[in-house]
Image 1 (cartoon, one colour):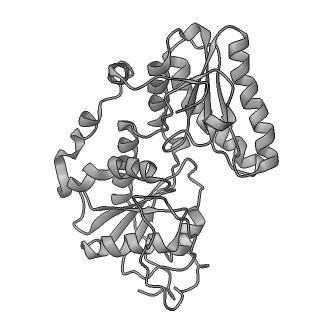
Image 2: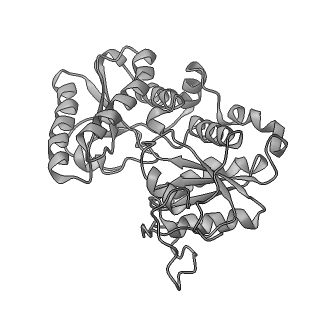
Image 3: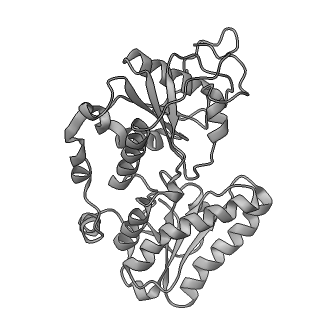
Length: 324
């Protein structure tokens, strides 16, 4: 990445950090898969919902679920609860014999698109029937630039569904991810402040919940090394007035670390990548590897845990009136 920040690439330190932090490497994380499909009903599969982005963003998500095929069928529905991509993922799972679909939602907040998704799946009233002429196929590229259509209608399906409610901000597995990022980047913890930076919502009350939940995950960073300050901020990227206030606070934190003769470590609490943070921090000195939560074995562990919990729970059929 460009600009004034110093980037520290991944190295063997990352693997040492995994071990030191009590987090197993990806190969160990998959050890529980030895039971294979026998631990699940033959008709169970997973639809992973993810925001989607450029090719690198999407590929990171696909890589995270690639090895789950030994356990259950998995299909990814990119988009912010878009009926087109959801319908296509449902079609693909049904073609593979799946009739019980666990919907794992790879979002920072467990509330993101939850009710909208229930309506699209026909689990709650609200979504209209699919428009005539809509073939249900996703004509965008899940592997290239993501096009967010945000279509809203009820899918056609014979399947029943169970939906995850936990977001990454609530996930116990994400604390060690942040700690590993901080260990890898740190050179002298006593002179380094850590900024954990997330997208953030528009509503103030909801934003406070984001901050509180991610701050709980940040305790793992505080426990990892003696950093003077570990702070969580949200940029509130899509709300210009609130973003302007947030940018001033974020830049002040980073500048203060330099003014005191230290360094700011910036860790994005995003599914993948650094988002717009390089632009926000332009002209300031800080260190970052530009990595979001992916790639990391603990994200795979979290996805697998969500799927296992859904598989062992109850499933809902679409409400009457939906097309089956």
